[in-house]
Image 1 (cartoon, rainbow, N blue to C red):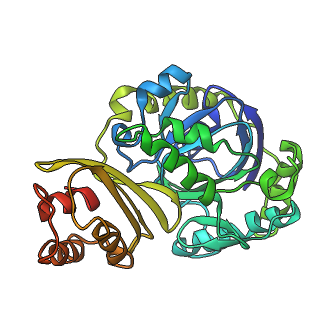
Image 2: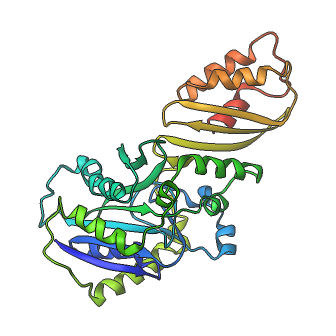
Image 3: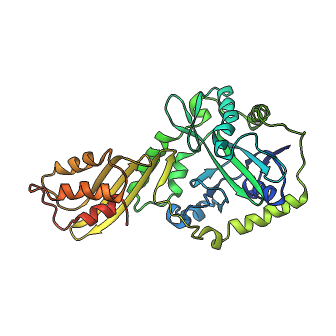
Length: 349
């Protein structure tokens, strides 16, 4: 297995190169970083539902869809990527594929430790700060061609304000809530330590730590064939056809970190415009906030229904049961708002 020190690259090659290597059957560990800011959409994301594409264009931020799952991410020069490509034909992984995240997270965890941040692996694919649980690295794995790829990045510095600006929200008042959620859920090395490490320092640490579990046969040099394919893939992956393709699954929420999702919604009922924010941990509702242009008495009952939904399973049936109990109370007057309206606001249609 070769080591590829790609360094800082432009033309979105920091994400297209590992796709090209996998398609051509190369093996190795790539360490790289982008010189530009761009957005990478997960394979199963529904781009037009997650991103404000018009705002991305206004800001001059390109958008590309990768062939690896996970959420939509903002990438820039303050992140260092590690990308492992393994041929299923030639090489047997030293671990089972379903253990990949746990095993391959260890070199990254040790790298963060050497940078002064104590971190831990959180299944399925996150690395978090031990003391706060904030996400500090996201990872992904996929089969591309005849290769298995495992990719991720170290966050040295992160622009949560810019990330909140490019996501699509039902109306602008939700954007600040999203920004606060990102601030609470994500961290980075400079935030934790007060120091911004150099790319070169992080590259060396990653190579040392990955070298403890992988056997490198020296350093490799990428051929023109790889760069040419990477640039062709850029054109494919940034095309409107690819970006707007329905790949079979919709993300109805914005993932802040593993185990924390925020869903914002606006729903028009006969009784007025309902607005809501729902935070879930993937299975259960963590919190619900409802507001808008409607009539409800007694006023205190809004807080009661919000509190009653905390801890409820995030399923249509369980939410409907709670909503139904609330609306059937004799003291509740919520004109023009039916159980289907609250269900649509909280769970979706």
